[in-house]
Amino acid sequence: MARQPIVTGNIHDAPQLAGYELLARHKRAQFPARTPGQFMSRLSTDHLATIDALALRSAIDEIIATQGHNTFVTFNCSILNLTRVDFVDYASLRIAALPASDRSRLVVEITETERVGDKKLASGWSLLRRNVDRLTASGARIAIDDFGCGNACLRLARNLPVSFIKYSKNVLDDCIAADADRPTRQDLMNIDLMRSIGSTMRGWGCDVIVEGLESASQISAAFDLGGNYFQGFMFGAPSLSTALPERDHNRMAAG
Image 1 (cartoon, rainbow, N blue to C red):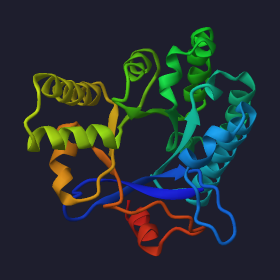
Image 2 (image 1 turned 30 degrees about the vertical axis):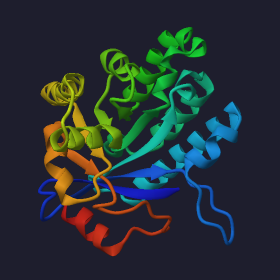
Image 3 (image 1 turned 90 degrees about the vertical axis):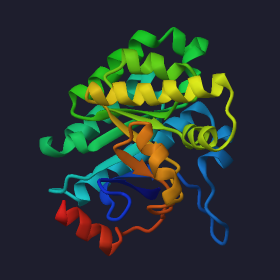
Image 4 (image 1 turned 30 degrees about the horizontal axis):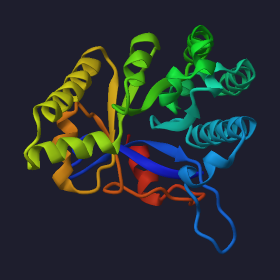
């Protein structure tokens, strides 16, 4: 698993480490690590469940290794796996093994939200809600990944106990393009909608992560989306290092 920092605070001058996202990577000797987009489509449903289970275990190991700190750890989990009772049984048992004070540091990022319209998921919608309720009852928190990419995200935000929404890089790029170019009326409506949703979610106590930041010129647009947490190459690329960088240890200790 690769680790990418998520920051908060004064991100112009002194970003404060808030957490990490764990990202699946396929590494072979003498070859570059491959991202999920390069290998996930070839895997069976059971193999995808195994990868999500490994990601969960890695996130919990990370939390155990940093007990006493207030950083959170997120991992990606397919929405279809959250309709599987066996997967949620396994997740609940692993979460229960954590000290009670550390369980809220685990954040489950729901991915593949475009599948909400799939027949397989449509028939299991009530099961999805029950399973997510089980995870939050165990102490974990829920995030919606790639928010703004399709209508499914709004349905999830309305119906699930969500603690975070994460705007995709595409949404951030669209905001910046709308300010720089000659946007159409529809472009402006879409951007205003994303900004309004971010503000509303913050008002209801939900945190907003904006990902894809690569330079200081994007910070203003990220704040306009309601962001209070930020992620991107500007703050650090995904790293396969098995140890936390020393400067991150120091920041966590300070937090």
